Length: 314
Image (cartoon, rainbow, N blue to C red; front, side, top):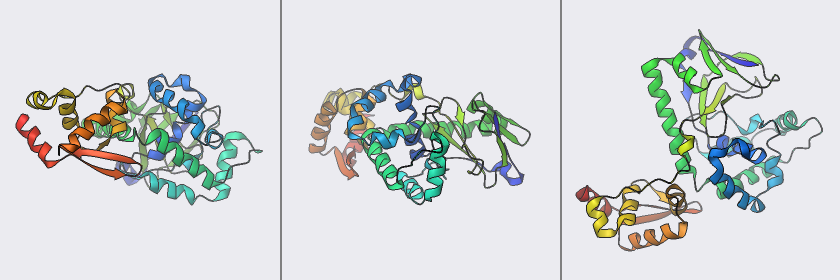
């Protein structure tokens, strides 16, 4: 059945893109229920299996049902491509208990006893720290790349063409944006008061919308490039610098123009964290990297000396 968003007046120009760390975290629970539907995420799913005994699996599994629905209160509409997880958690923490119970009973039936919202947030925060935080910079880069692509498509081909390119189930006819869904239980039409938000995701097969018509207008769609997310990326190797430092260390310097953790670098390059740490320690000891703690991670980036070396080498 379709959901129809009616663009009214200035809303024709009020289509915005946003990225939501919380949406990605919650929607990734689909892979808990049906990992076979996510073969492109197999490397991450293997790591998840090893981490399950350190997570509140009972609470996390209650946040998705066999139809792969998740509660609306856990996927609030993000405002910008720069949305922060802590801000989204604060918004969820303020959700009235009645709404939490209503949304979870939509998933599991009237007899379901919902966990306290504090337990839900604690379970999701632990899941984030263990399974998402090491990979989030790489994930965010993929999502931001999609947003950039869609914006360019609007400029070059128009709004209707952009909507048609989101997913086979999305189309724009006149002032109506229609999303066709598999479920016969979701069928509504509403104006896009306050605008329509488009959110790229790594965890939807096509396109999805809020279950309730009372929720702000939002379409979550499959981002481009998921197939490349877990591929090992070759290090760039500036020739003169590689001869001086070795190809791996020169490549790390070239990569660390933006801060990254050793765990993220290992995942990106397809090597062990131990191997990366050996190179990072040597480069930092030589004054070519600086480091700073960010939450539970240590982030590394090039020093000014390394910037000058790369400029001369390249």
